[in-house]
Image (cartoon, rainbow, N blue to C red; front, top):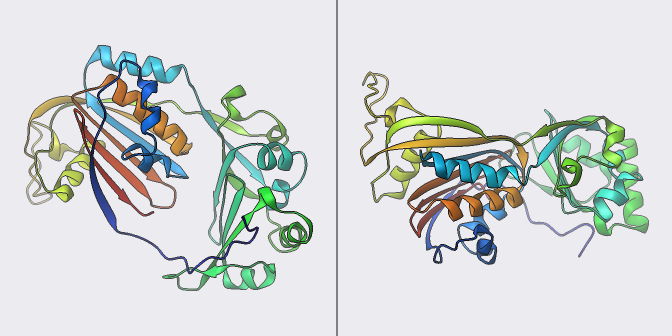
Length: 320
C-alpha cells in the first residue's frame, strides 16, 4: 500500500441508491448474523466511517424492548472529546498505541479544514493556500468554491523520508490545536484509556434515548422514495404520521396512510463507526421479526436507512 495513494479528483456524491434483499432464517442467537456482514443491509452500515446519529424504530412491545436493551447494555461503548495538534498524533506514545498497534477513529471539522483518521489512514481537507505550503500530494475537490484539496496519508506504513515530510507539514504549517471526537474500537476501559489520558479526554457513554411515538401510520407505498420519506418522518416523530394529530393543510399537505401501529424509537447521538452500527442492527434483527427500521446520519452527510418486514429488507444508501 502506498503512503501517498494516487487519487482522482474528489467530488460530492449526492445520489441515493435503493436495494432489496432477503435475510436468512432468523436464528435464536443474534450473533449468528455475523456471517451476513458482507451482504446488504449489514455491509451498507459497516461501510459508514464517521457516524453522528442512529435511530431505530420497532413496535412498542415491553418484553422485546427490555430484551434488546439488556443485550445492548452488556456491550457498552463510549467516545471522547479531546483537543490536540496533528503533530501529537505522530508523536510517541500516542502513535504506537493507537496508529501502529491500535484501531482508533478520529474526526475534526473546523471552519477552514476537516481531518479524519480511520485504520491508520489520515485524511486532510484544506484550502488552496494551506495545501501549497504543506508539501504533500493531494487532489482538488470538485464542487468547492474556493478551491479545496484532499490529502490522504497512510500513517500506519509511513517511515523514513515519507514520515519526515509529514512531520514537517504538521510542525510548520498545520500547527494549531483542534477539537477532535475520538472512538476506540477496544471495549476495555470504555475505549478511552492509555496515552489519550494526557490530553484530558471528556468521555461520553453511548446510551440510547427512548421515545414512545404512540399510534402512527406504517408505510405501505411501493414507491421507494415515498417509503423513505415516511420512515424519516417517523424518525423525526412528526405529527404528519401520527394518528389523530391534525396539521393545518396550509402548513403541511402531507397525509400519511397505512397500517396503524404503536412504535418506539431508540436514538443514539454522538460519535461511532459502522462496527457499532452493525452490532446494533444484528441485535435488533435477532429480537424483532415483524417490523423494524434503522436510520443513520454521518458527519459528512452520508447515511443509510434500512426497513425490515419479516425477512424482506429495503436499504437506501446516499452520500458514499
